Amino acid sequence: LSIFAVEKEPHGLFNFRYIISFETLVGDVPNFVVDTSDLIGSDNNWEVVSLIDGKFSHIKLDAPTYEIQTVKMVVLDSSSLLGATFTLDFMGQSTDPISWDADENEMLQKLVMLSTVGDIIVSLELDDVSDDRSWHITFNPYEGKSSISTINFGNLPPIEVSSVDDSISVQAETVN
Image (cartoon, rainbow, N blue to C red; front, side):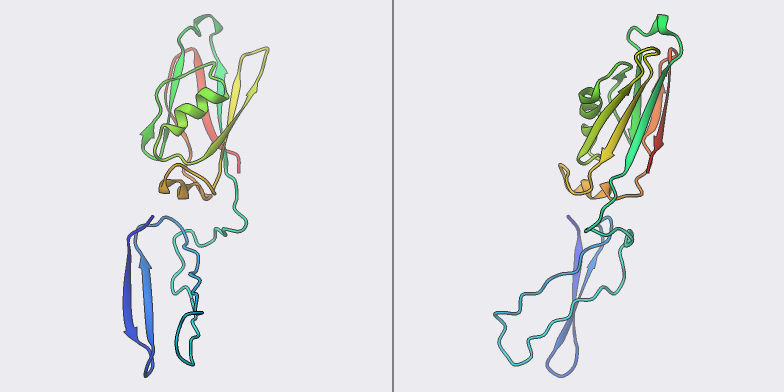
């Protein structure tokens, strides 16, 4: 998950202090738990403290926020919808073209093809009269297909609309 460095320095007469610095992990790293049951000696106490909180230290692993972003599509010209598509960008990567009438599964498949997207849930809200659609994308901070899914922890950059056919209007917004 991360590149880290370990520094060992004397701490008192017979003790050492180890400083572990994470250089590449996105977010705050939980404190280590040290098993002292097999240590020999009369002073087998360990203290684990965070010297510097990580970049996203306000994110608590025990109560994550599931960020929801919404992509809204409005039909501008219903007579020219045939083949209408749009593409989305997320953290520097672009989806393949997404059809204007994509269901939840198609939107999910297009987004999870991006290596910057971890585990997500997609739901669809459809206006049967106008054919307007809203896809709600929920980012799950616990899961993902790679270590990059750690980015699913809150304060995500917004999904951006990168290309749109003239017959539709598409916008993206963060709900929470």
